[in-house]
Amino acid sequence: DTGVSQDPRHKITKRGQNVTFRCDPISEHNRLYWYRQTLGQGPEFLTYFQNEAQLEKSRLLSDRFSAERPKGSFSTLEIQRTEQGDSAMYLCASSLGGGASGSGEQFFGPGTRLTVL
Amino acid sequence: GIQVEQSPPDLILQEGANSTLRCNFSDSVNNLQWFHQNPWGQLINLFYIPSGTKQNGRLSATTVATERYSLLYISSSQTTDSGVYFCAVYSGGGADGLTFGKGTHLIIQP
Image 1 (cartoon, rainbow over the protein chains, first blue to last red):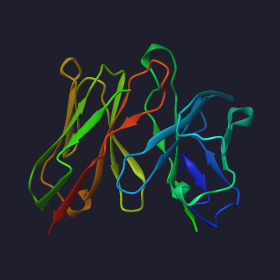
Image 2 (image 1 turned 90 degrees about the vertical axis):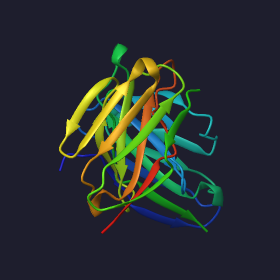
Image 3 (image 1 turned 30 degrees about the horizontal axis):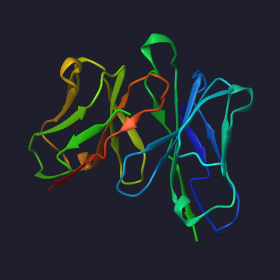
Image 4 (image 1 turned 135 degrees about the horizontal axis):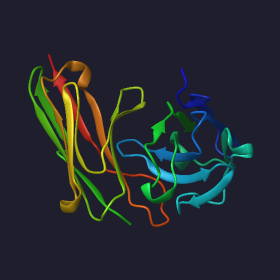
């Protein structure tokens, strides 16, 4: 299967701890996105990379959140000093995009469900 | 930013029925996608349809970009069609993520 993969699928942590999630995009895709989804809502955009460059960050991405995509391949999303409000599903997507056509069709991974106790 | 409204928010149908889900958006868009989110949270791509009409089996979709809406049709519903259907748009202009609606929660009863 060559779809988007995410690890771990579930993470339970205590308030104040740091957590890191990993996303492996579809191999030929140059764009990688992170979204957050809370119960009963649609996913909300957090940030995106074109190759290794982080080009856009949402206002939702507080200073406790940081994302990297070294070498333009996999990406990591780290949350420092987790809070109970960080509990959500964290989704990663990738696309082959750019130019006037926009982002291209985005394909999503299975998500990492974070629970902060 | 762009606003996306989906209707109806909830829909309960008997197996075999047909349904139409609507997505309205507040500004011009470059891309529009329909997704089905299964009970495990996986978003499954249904259509990539910034304009025009597409069909895939029992599902079809139409986007009328000039009037800022899209419709998803499901015919001869099956219980496996149950779940949440999301419309998401990309408007460009620096906000390069998709903007999602709140979804339509579809329940197909046997």
